[in-house]
Each structure stands twice: as structure tokens, then as C-alpha cells.
Image (cartoon, rainbow, N blue to C red; front, side, top):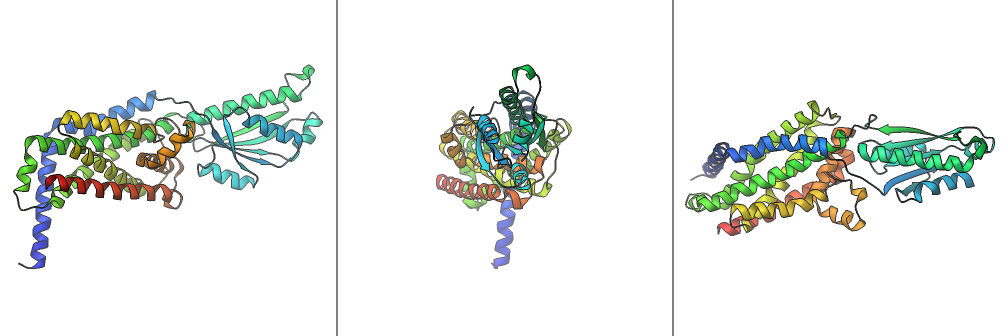
Length: 378
């Protein structure tokens, strides 16, 4: 038998198994419910309901005045713990770039004439740039800055002129001028739902075949463990990509979330996230003995993954230990990519570190899960 005919047989076997897997999924109403209805339902519920609080916002300051008054103003901004000074110095353009790239939550530009105008009792404006991708964080940052400046003005202005404001904030919000909260929640929830569905469905399909004895029957056919695994991953990945498109349409036309980036890049990153979820599900199914055990184990793993991802609560509000732990969470990188592509229109040149981390997680988890799966078959 020639090598070409062996290749054709190999592909035909995978195709036959994939068609079998697709038909089996389509006949299971519970899995179809998980694939299509649950993502839309959870996307709507979480998109309307979530409202987290944040602290330890990253602040950048350009002090052109370099005076005691300007240093006092900067100290007033960081002394309450809401803002952490991350960047000092540079130009207005470089500060704006850091805010646009998400490296800073807020930027403050103090003009050189600050102290001179205050001594002359003239009003002076300071420029404030806030990353509006997280509407809740941006609103809190704006509110705190306004409160800090009000207290600072009371300290500067005599009692007889207590109602006047010498230092006026000129606040601009990047990417979300209206501070629409759903623009932050919905992309994160989209990533959250995709992770849950991919993990639960892949776990359910493998455990169901273990319970029904289908895996033993497949081992009696002229196919190997790689073909069995590929036949499970490919059709499920295709269906989950359809789930991504449906969820994206819901986000766009129900919550009016903008899509400013590349659709091809978004689908590519989503495919990596799907591979991660499927790999986690197959690994859990390899350890579980039945459906109930697999479901409980899945939630036990997914809950910390979700909490540390930044989809529900911003990472800045978490303790340092949890922020370091989140680096081991693949969902964190997908959430970051989703928000950057949808809201900022970021390209691969900007988000490549997150894409690379997600690709590494997908490769490692798929390798480990396939080895565990094949070891169980043997």
C-alpha cells in the first residue's frame, strides 16, 4: 500500500470520526443548550448586572511646574491609596501613549504656570487623561481626582473666597467617552463564557463516552488515539467558533460594544482560547469517573480562573499575590486581548505578548491533555 493511500485512509478515518462526533453533539440537546443558549443568557445577565470596585490605579504625572505647590498636588493624589504613581516625567505625547496602551489608568499634566497663576489668584487648568476602557474604573478615577482637587482648592483659596476654584481639571476619557459600563463588562464576560462553555462541553463529551462505553468500542476500530482526540477537538472547535461569532453579534447589536480591531485577529485569538478550554476539559475528564464528578471538578477549576482573569474585577483591585497568580491564568491574557481588539483597535504589534502567552498555554495544555487522554486509552 503506497504512502499516499495511507494518508488518504488516515484523513478519511479522522473525517468519519469527526462526522460521528458532530452528529452526536447535534443530537444532544443539553450540549446544544450549553453551546448556544447559555452563552447568550450569561452574556446578557452579566453584562447588565456586574459592577466591581477598584483601587490602586496606575497614575502617570508630568510636572512642568516643578514647584512646591505642584509637588503638594501630586502628593495629595497618591496619599489616599487610590492612585499609585507609576510614571513621572516625559512628554504629554508619551504619557498619552502609555494611557492608550493600557500601561497607565490615568495621566496628569501639570502646566508650568501653576504656581504663578495660583499666587495671582488666577484659574489654571490641569490636563487629565483617563483610560475609559473600564468605565467603572474611569468613573471612580474621575470622581477621586475631582474630590482631591476640591480639597486642594480649599487649602489654597482663602476662606472669604471658599466657593472659587483655582485649579480646574480638564478630564478626557480615552476609548469610552460616555463611560458606558457594558463596554467593559461585555468583552470580559464574552471571554468568561467562552472558557466555561469550552471546558464544560469538552469534559461532558469525553465523560459521556466513558460512561456509555463508546471509547472502548472506538479502540476496537482501526484508528489510533491521536485520531480519536483530533476528531473530538476539531468539530467542537468549529462549533465554539460559531459561539464566538454569535456572542460577538450580541455584544455589538444588543450592548452596542464597538469593534475597532481586526476580525481575523480576534478570531485567531479566540481559537487559541478555545484550544485552552478544550484542553482543560479533556484533562478534567481524564481524571473524573462520572458526569457529576466532572462537573464539580470543572467548577472548582474554573472559578479561580475566572476570578483571576480580570473579566469580573480589574486586576488592579486585587492583592499583589493574586496579581502574580493571575500570570498563570490563560484567561487573563484572552480578556486583555479581547478588550484591546474590540475597544482600542489594537493590532498584533501591540498585544503580541498576550497572544504569545496564550499560544504557549494552548500548546502546553493541549500536549498535556492529549498525553493524559492517550494514556487513559491505553
